[in-house]
Image 1: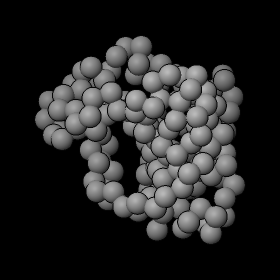
Image 2: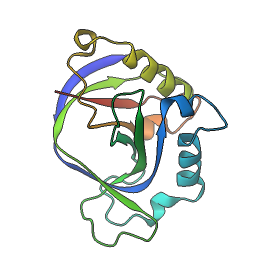
Image 3: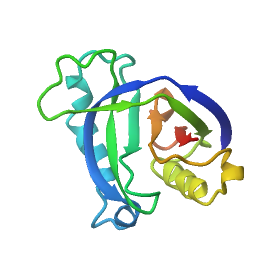
Length: 162
């Protein structure tokens, strides 16, 4: 994986969310994130989002961490917007505060395997290997045109650091 340091401004997202933990996500019977993705794309939730800044660039954010990657967190899928006006019923808002990130760009591969494998690698990294101490505020993945072919995708993973 390629790794770079960046600081990003506030990001406003509109989409849908679930509460989960990685232990539940490792079991197909209790996993919620794959169902959230399915709902988002099968029901074309993105089409109902007004004021999209970059249509068809999907964010998958992890926030409201109970502790670290082993605890509960909220998974939010949506798109960036430039205005929080006209939020349709059933959709949620997530505002990501400005922060520093280590951005990992995955190798090309099959979705969701490349994302799962990359996160497992990130979780095993020490602070020095990562490039900073994780702050567990908000982390996110970006699915853009490089992820349009699920058999040959590249995803950016942004990990918040202090």
